[in-house]
Image 1: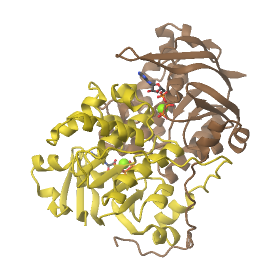
Image 2: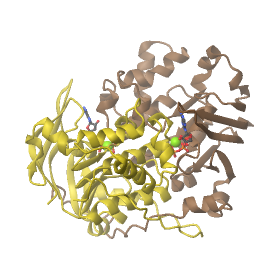
Image 3: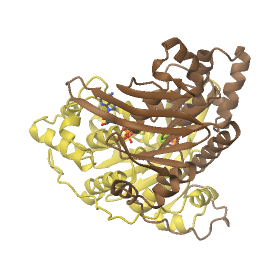
Length: 282
Length: 272
Ligand SMILES: Nc1ncnc2c1ncn2[C@@H]1O[C@H](COP(=O)(O)OP(=O)(O)OP(=O)(O)O)[C@@H](O)[C@H]1O
Ligand SMILES: Nc1ncnc2c1ncn2[C@@H]1O[C@H](COP(=O)(O)OP(=O)(O)OP(=O)(O)O)[C@@H](O)[C@H]1O
Ligand SMILES: [Mg+2]
Ligand SMILES: [Mg+2]
């Protein structure tokens, strides 16, 4: 088992007192598995993933529950131990890409800093991998982009830079919070194919938050449906989507618009680009 | 009558390394009052830059922009500031566009204060609360900071801020990208109602072709800073002439499996 979350309760201290945001969340992400989280805006999806990797925005606080990653109790580790895991063993793609980027450092420097923070030498191979990852997520002219700054990026470019950073050190688990909201369908596919190839197809796993049921359907094996701070339904995607047990899931499915009919054009399959494996695949 | 008239607009960015990026390359178009023009195009094609140029949040290199018949590029800062309330924008990056130090109340109220024409503090407060309610956010959010909101809630604050002054033109840059389907539908319904009731004009930037098809009467397709195809939503999206447009639409996901029991729910809710 890659990730095991048990009875997680998270609360926010507000002026009106303590508000419980998660009411006892339990789920698992297995090896080689992609698990999706869907649910209404404000239902607690980001709070779940931020609780798991201990990046809650204050005044958020995990009140009880356990999180086990590769056999280690994440909620009990020291902050320094956790920092060693985040970015290396767990790659995190935040919902808001620009908040994850440093405005005053060139992107290449930011990639190098990730490596250094985990005791990996930022050599030529390191740079190659960063450029390859950008190319594999469909960023055109990555050599040029990586020499620039965050403010020069369009919304969709920033999103892909953050994805490349999360994949950079070959994490065992990728946690992605709405990773493709700024991407058109073609690029979205390419990015998700790349994520899949570098995680599940390489013996790793992924937890992905999305409001796009099509993405869940095409890329996830299992899905968790959240509603008002609880998981109201979880199971295999095909089962949940054909026979939803909870009214919220049903309403979600019924509001999904019919699929777009592909225009009569050649569907160019996204080319799997070579990504330098560096420092080394585990 | 055209409420937006843009002619041969250009914008080049100069990076610190001295590199030049031609982000908008000679774009011309007009939008009738009460109309919605959708803008689609691949990532980096210049859509957000165009939206910002239109409201002079970037200075164009050349070209002309008439909004409500006024040459916006010629307005002095003070006049521009006064007109702002008629021309608003919802930014693509919800969080980055909200001042982290201000409360939601202060953020949504700010355009009213800038406009200077919206009466007393109580009147403004009421108006802010009402606008937030229209985007589905209750009064409990008024005192919170942006960081204490979910992504979709932040996005709706941005929408409320753009509508609070009763504008005539709104640039919507991926306004529903962070919203789940149900809330997305209700926001689009609200925007559509406003458009009909007040004759609002929208520039609707989105990569969500399905939404553009339903929401916009006309569509422009952007590629490398230019419009490569403009026409009615039906013509452009049903029968795209440009290979580029066809490509943009060709990657639809496989259809969802049909939900057999929708509408006849059992009540076995709870954690499984
Ligand atoms: N730091 C915080 N302080 C107080 N309340 C918070 C904080 N962060 C989130 N919340 C509230 O907790 C609830 C869950 O937020 P969360 O960000 O997890 O939602 P979400 O499911 O990710 O929604 P979205 O799809 O809109 O991103 C929301 O109602 C939000 O307003
Ligand atoms: N301040 C800037 N400095 C340098 N280059 C910039 C700047 N802002 C935008 N660009 C560049 O201009 C081009 C157009 O960017 P823009 O943000 O308008 O794209 P977009 O169509 O909105 O893309 P997306 O769908 O990803 O949001 C991109 O190549 C981008 O890198
Ligand atoms: Mg979220
Ligand atoms: Mg943009």
